[in-house]
Image 1 (tube, rainbow, N blue to C red):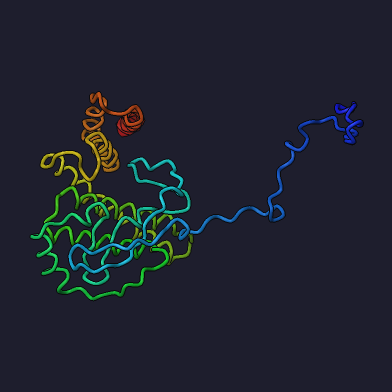
Image 2: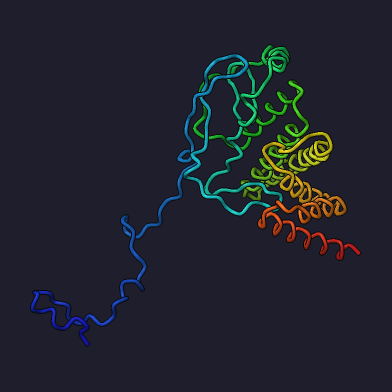
Length: 283
């Protein structure tokens, strides 16, 4: 049956047109002849931003994320952020190539005159300038170097415990990302992966101890996180270290907090189920 019979008077020939949705059943061919679209490169998510060093007053360029382009994925159990095609953690540190002052972006401009004096004496005086050329993208080793330099600067300027803990947490996440990126099974790659996991564990331990101490000595928000977020983070870390009593207390605080979001309470509930299962299995 020709569903379009009668259109001949308009000069339109639509013979044998019986399936209106035939084209929709066929996969659409791409403009390049059916080839799959290439994944975007990491540098396509980055832009150069000129910033002035708070310590030496020189201007340098640093990589920033084009937030409008990145697609967020489901985070890890401990809230490590994940994005499609790029690990944004690598670009959350600004490092002056002239004097060595380095800090996470949220802290870079916020230093007192007393802290600047300490940084100049203990960092800048010994720093070997690396030049002003910023690489197109950072690999994990380069990002880890910058975070370690940021952590050292934090210690030198006598920064808050939470800032040091947060630096350690992000370092552990970077080592996790580095281990995930190592896909080979040859002895050299396996050794590198083992070393990355060991470093991840070491910094994770430091981060856990730091946040536990900060909970009793600092006010919220902490590193931009409210109490429920820090409680959940600590619960996830305590779960990792099999400190189920600590994890359970943190989760209980979240569940008893009226202002906690439904999403956070759901995360806490899922983590609680994991803890209960682990406790049962250990008996």
